[in-house]
Image 1 (tube, one colour):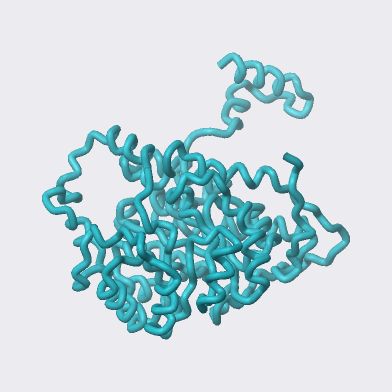
Image 2 (spheres, rainbow, N blue to C red):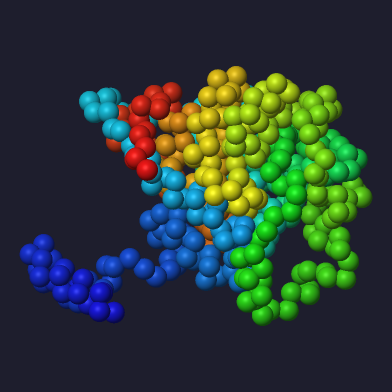
Length: 397
């Protein structure tokens, strides 16, 4: 309180604030929780609102990473080491964020990343997100551990989604879901490859311990595989929990997918030049540079730092998306400048979903688009094609 009182005294002495009372000064200091989506100034306002409304364990699912959250924190702090280089005297009277991504005509490079179990955050879950994607014209990637079916989500969005697949050691399970996604109209399959072994989510376990609710009505603990009953995409597949660990998966799996499906195949979870080169060699149609939002391995390596080597290895042969740690329009701009074609946001829209449902997701998208357009104008870039590496520098270590 002493620091705040000193700040108020300093502000009160300013001629710019003559006549202001301590109470009005206090009210102007950032803090508190928004009560409506339109009150949000940035996506972090939704984080505070989501934390207040969600059960402790459910918020913990969004908030945490692995081990001591080193990679989670690295994903954010890495952006601070990058600075923007503005180019003046450029005509930015018309900002254009349109792009073509694997045959999809998009009005923004901001993509809704796959995230499972969204009914844990709002009763409309993936359907609310799909309706927001429809109203704001954004690409949505649907997780195969979603709590709504791909058929219902595509109906809500009004056009196909990309379908994300966690591979299992049982090909029969994967093949059934792929055929179902194809039939529903999905044109792109996103294969997640960064969770082939278990992850050490210690901080999530601590959140769960703090949650005193009786969760037995929603979480059946009597059977190991009961959680799959709440995942519509697994209906009729015969999947078991033990099959989700896939340490034996190799690049042959990608070739098998390419032979099996008519969908384009994007590999999600690559962070090195070596794997990027292998992805191209084995026929991948795209890459998502990702460390699972810091929830896979405790590498301490941010995706914005690994992005340049992946871009260099691919040499423009296939498109590159990136996720993990993105929260602002400046984050998006930095990734685009370093060679990404699109940027996937996860936690940000989940906060909006938890706090206000569809309206919350829409406001998150509005903020991110407005921020991107603003920074594009500030940097002197009228279109995505104008954004090149010369607009980003890195502070010395």
